[in-house]
Image (cartoon, rainbow, N blue to C red; front, top):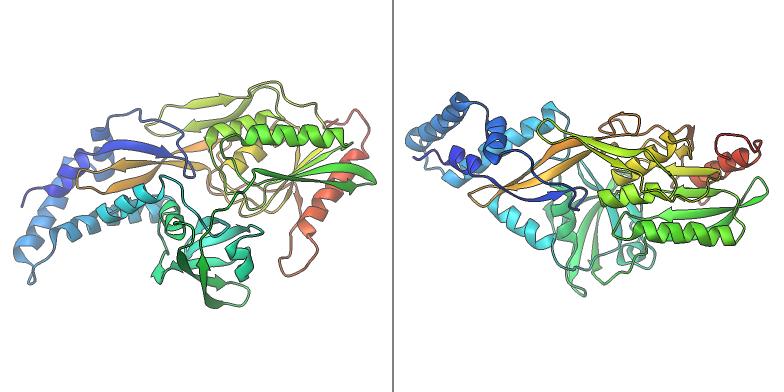
Length: 403
């Protein structure tokens, strides 16, 4: 048998880079070098090829060679996931990669959820109002474990969410685990077109003073412009302080993370990237920030990726305090790299560093002021904690750091 495994790895070609489902970077090293790094030296590649040959020639049953090769590559990626606690690297078989390309391109309808990848499947971070998911009674914190009867445990988040999306009017069945009751239930939903704005705003009171509340729902294209416009409108309404709520915000575009941070941070580094084979990059504030005012960023365990970049940038620059729960810890980015046999590797190639040079990977951001929202209660304890913190900041003398 030809050394097929080694051949399709070494012939890999880069097609696209993803950061929470969005393009952010480009290849800098030779693909052959990448493949060599993954497989090992020539002796390791020959060992893999020899093992495949022995199984092909000597195993007591006929074995599908494509399945063997898929299993071999899956084993490599599983090792990376376990050895380096990397939840975000995946291998796509040719069939899965074809689905991935279809499901992550074009326009699709959905059921009104944002999610984060967890071991069992997808944990629901946000359920949008006026959506099929909300109308069915699906709740934040629930975990989608299967779509149309097929398990999504351990599956790439983009591929899994792509299975949930589809044409408006078509059905989809979500198997949902509710951790609070440990019960699982199937929800039959009908997809529909959903329009979700990047920001939601309202006026609140903190310490007897009017303050602006902005919920930033994602870092999609143009989010920074919507955020700045929201700040300016709240200023016109007399807001003396500001809460930016990033709870349930799983991230988005890297350039939007930089631009939204630049709404508040006038100059200096917003974030930098570092990888073993990737060129180091530094992203600076764009300038023309709004006037400083007491500001609080509210986060929870589903605030991830671009949300963490934004939170760290504002906090490190001294323009905002952090309230809430520890963030998700998605401080790495991936590249999707095609393989000659039709499959692909979606692997972690670098990490994000804060303005102060701290890695955002793994541990997440610890809030300076803990405030936990209890999902079973009607009051929003997390928001109240942010209002209390903002009220305290507003009562400080005018020469305090946030004034």
